[in-house]
Length: 524
Ligand code: HEM
Image 1 (cartoon, rainbow, N blue to C red):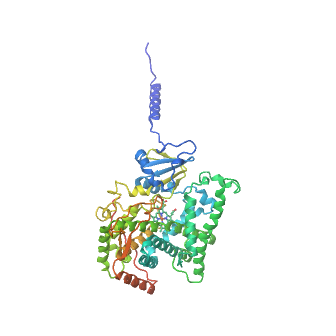
Image 2: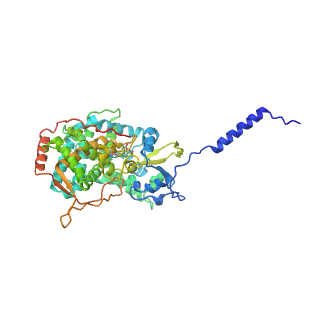
Image 3: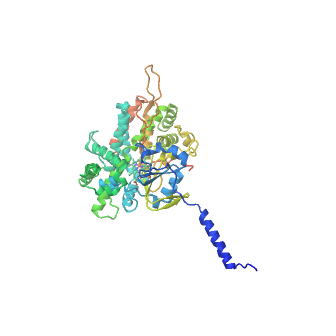
């Protein structure tokens, strides 16, 4: 008896076998790896009070560049490689540029537009910032930038030991002038105090471990219930945040009405209306864009310049080399101007290295993905918060030789990847004020070097003793307080500053050349 096999049945069996084999051996996308979460609380116990950038390294070594944590059921993914950050925040920017719900600040404090969601909410303020803060528009602020620099130099002459305070004062004054055209009267100025309080509240509302950020429906509970303290806190904060965005805005508006407004971000937007919104909506957009800039700019300049002063204290040879370059351009007869900077490649390298080594912002603001996605074989679930660890990008050994060393020659001689490519994050939520920040820090670095020697402190025997390098552990990174001597380079220093001050006063409407473009070509 012959056993006949129907060819159709045979072919169908083969096909089923093949499909089953494919199905069984298919590589399933997995969630990104990370420390094992506990039931319910997840990895909440591992969550530190300071910046997570400093805690990621052991996990990066164990799990790789993409690390997933879970807190109270909410996934948070950290990216420690700039390539992954560019792939997601930039190339897939249409789905990775949102911000997480942040219910405490958005709903409870009624300040949703200070952390705008990607799309309709972020489009207008981003466009406003882009327009007013693009390199070609920034020349209009040159006089302010130089004037504020002179105040810093004068402050350093008067009380050099108090340099962190001088930096903070300059930063606040500069931000108030650029955004609102407001000249602060003193450290006790109402707008200064209001801004300090506003920044503090905003940061606490955003980064504090508020239960309502994890369980947004808690916001509907009545405020008198025990354990709902956050609602009482939020109602106080709401008032301060409102006053913070209203008061300086109304100042500029009334100055404009009286024809006395100084040039500023807000005055520009109110005068040359460019967006098709009704009046109320337009004004709200300007107010929020302005106050968000205030929040972004308040501490970052201070952090960068503070790191620069530490680097110069530790490296007198680098300082001398940069000073020689500056003197070669100005002949020591004037302060460097924006147009001089393109002839100072080593000073540019010091600026880049200050951004890299100092890393003023260690983590990107949190991004948020609204849809499920797959990347490098991992599932990135919808509603995942994603954070780029900028500190890792700027200390990546595949990009930077001995990244722990402050070494500007990595840019002036070795063509390593420019720090400005990462320090401001990447993609569609990259810092909108990056050009302004770069321009300000560049000029201040060049002018401080032109006028001062920064030296280590002396011990009882009169010997120089290098300060210890200790950093704070916050998201905004700067060194811990250290001692140094900031000495005028010569008796001409005061004369140089005074001469420049007189020039600024005489021609406060002068609009000098635009900022130089970097003289390096990045290798990444
Ligand atoms: C060295 C100086 C600065 C650094 C390193 C820096 C860095 C950053 C970083 C890393 C972000 C988050 C980007 C992301 O989420 O991916 C950011 C956002 C932002 N920065 Fe800066 N920044 C600096 C100076 C400034 C200044 C001077 C201002 C304002 C005058 C400013 C305004 C902002 C604003 C408004 C945002 C939020 C953008 C958004 O949500 O779309 N920053 N910055």
